[in-house]
Image (spheres, rainbow, N blue to C red):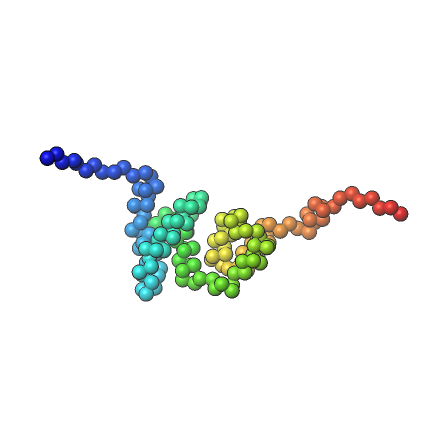
Length: 149
């Protein structure tokens, strides 16, 4: 009988990073949860990876927990949403969509502001970033008009 020797699998760089960070990420999340929520750490870690890998990687300062900064940033968002979810009445999605357009078209940092600071902070930020000054509106709308006397 011939035996086949098991050779180790080669992992891609993202897989290696995942393997290296998974334990640290679970510790990071668990240390910030109440004891009664420790059983949810695995699910929250999965949500963190989903967020982190679905968005562009931005440089963030690394925490002291051996978790890269860009992953820790997403973990903080997931933890904040888990620990203090915005009640359905606090975020008026029809109002936000009417003012800012669909959330899929928002800049990424707007989602973080909404998650971390709430709707009012997002509207203040959007007003500073998007809404033009009255003089800009006047210049854009101004068109030559012929007036008959």
